[in-house]
Length: 304
Length: 313
Image (cartoon, rainbow over all chains, first blue to last red):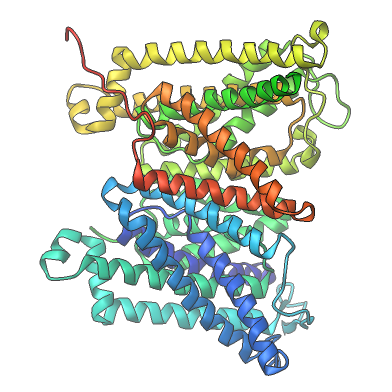
């Protein structure tokens, strides 16, 4: 029981971080970005390359007990976040900015094209074989013995992912609610014309949205690589859970995206136990269908 | 000479089969403004429906009903249409990007079923021994390829004629009116949802037909024939040819399939034998670039939307 929940929360924290960025993109850039999953995948793979460089420089991975990784991976995470942010800014300047006037659906088509090019770019560069940040086996810690609700085992890496996700989410919330730029972003999401009248530079807000979405995506991608594995289809596999989380939470809502992500993660975990791992991806689809039928505005739709 | 004829007929059968699918997509997107990201799923439903119904008896999966090919194709259209009805009834009432996400979801789910429901679809091994019509008297050689090409041409012509008649009819005018200004159309008593749903279902049926035509030409289908790249190729064809123009849809299918084949051949020439998987990946990147350039430089496509002026109205 508890184990299913814990596994689901670990999957869900990856989905949550990705969904925050996708949700902000949806509400501020105003289109469904089918390329968002690829940002997670690129984050994961850039970190893999950076990790190789740092480990070579440092003469090893320097794991900090009890985790499977050390400072080289944390440094690689920072490099990946910056690289993915740069990637989104280039994509925006080269592609999305030129298409903004043509309406949301043109942007969706463009993002679909960008996603395929990005995914196959990864396949070209890294090959299709799954990879890992560390080959070391990690021993799961018993948090609860077996007789209490079936017991609970979790690896230190998974605990790290859960904790850092919580910290990141609080950070994003503080940024959006307290900082000037964050307020400008929320104002643009609610009413772009009014925000412009108030002296907010829309292009600056859009760039900030890309960068924040990219940073969160890179962190989520590295977490996915840390807790599962790296493969070029990572972004494609996560896209449906991401969209399900965003719509479940309500477009534009940070807490909604987090809760939506956790619900989708737990739904996947339950699906693995009930119908088997091969239909895991369908769980997100059924969450999506259910929310579209019952409450298409999501659980926490921003009031407009 | 015979080699060229053989390659040419292969190339054209694929391009024109895709043209049928792109015509369905054009009805949905070009004339009605419905964004379908699950084309591959609807094509797969058609291909599998016809394959399961027409193959000879199989012990390891459902089906092998041995139906005549023509009934298989009709059933393919029917089942794909039903899938379109289900998705459309759910998502067409909501904002347009929800339809995109819902269709993406259905394509992912269909892919999962095709891969895992072994009893229905044969799993990753797919369905084999799909009957090739007319093979009894034409054999498997060039004559059969050319005959199948003629059959596809005939079908494509019929689909084109039917669609042109439809979009020129009052029904087609309502579709464009809803696409341009839903409120204005509604004020004239046209229920946008009903018209959108009809257009979406007809488009899905054509995608199913395209899938069935593909299955009976190749004789073998597997889940990896219906990956998201297929959806993307169909979109590339429509955007290059010009959305909202049926002749553009067919032209786009020929141009993009040509670009795809030529790009693949060129990459295979440059990249050494052991790296063919990477060459295939690069081929997809190229087509992604093509569509991005097209959107930025010539968003209306080669032909662009046909201007229609109402006469005698």
